[in-house]
Image (tube, rainbow, N blue to C red; front, side, top):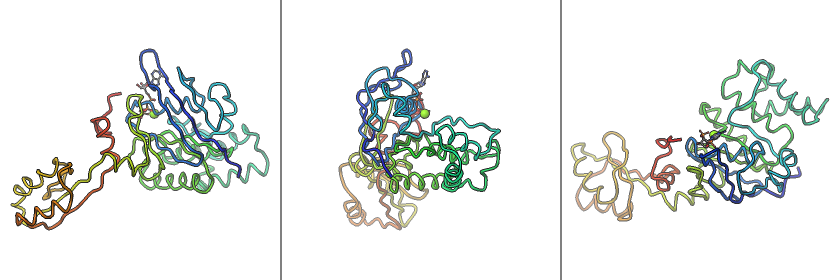
Length: 318
Ligand SMILES: Nc1ncnc2c1ncn2[C@@H]1O[C@H](COP(=O)(O)OP(=O)(O)OP(=O)(O)O)[C@@H](O)[C@H]1O
Ligand SMILES: [Mg+2]
């Protein structure tokens, strides 16, 4: 399958809405076949970025090319190269899944037997073969998201934009969608630009992650590198004797800052003053016996916290 040799290039992209600066001058370089996770809280500027890159919204300043085409000057060429499943899916509740796909195929000039086969393949791929002839108003949120993905794939795009594709999905549907997106990138070389509020999603799926906050990219890199750079591991200890929790608190407090732990346990996020072996030596020296010692590697949550001073969950300040 012929795939675009070009991914996405963005330089100084800005979008203002009156006095709101939704996107404040971002730079991005996304390679062909890469899955790029665009991570940020509500109102960070994710959808506005997607709308500019999919030619739905003109930038206030800066430039962007998608599949090698300028989003302002070559809109039709951009649109022919991309598929998009946007945050507000535009589905007609009174049409069936299959009817949506038929309509969309016709818009792309796909007809006859080729269309029939394509639709069967796409319904199968997103797990909607059984439900294909049911009206969309009977679909669950997850089924609508999956139909939306099938619609975005109709014309075999080389670049796919997914705006919060798994928000509101149950865990099974989420995993199924992750599998499908991973397969598209791996087996078909599709470039994927995916926005999400789920750190786990970016962690599992994305080759590279950009964290956007108040219209600025505050961190970028592979999930592993970002975590290694910023996040520090957490040590959680369960004392053998429950009444030694107080002594444990004092001891672990020397190695880091208290963080959430299970009942009966105490945990700290390690600071620069020690590592797991140091903690174990200290437990030994002070003759404090542990029933259990756990080391948790940092998550992208820690990265977000380190970069913005807020947790992703508690940062809905629009
Ligand atoms: N059409 C618009 N008119 C005015 N302001 C807008 C418009 N679209 C977005 N904004 C503002 O721009 C900022 C970024 O919004 P955007 O929708 O890009 O955020 P987001 O990261 O997609 O958030 P969410 O996770 O909630 O979808 C917000 O402050 C929002 O209120
Ligand atoms: Mg959005």
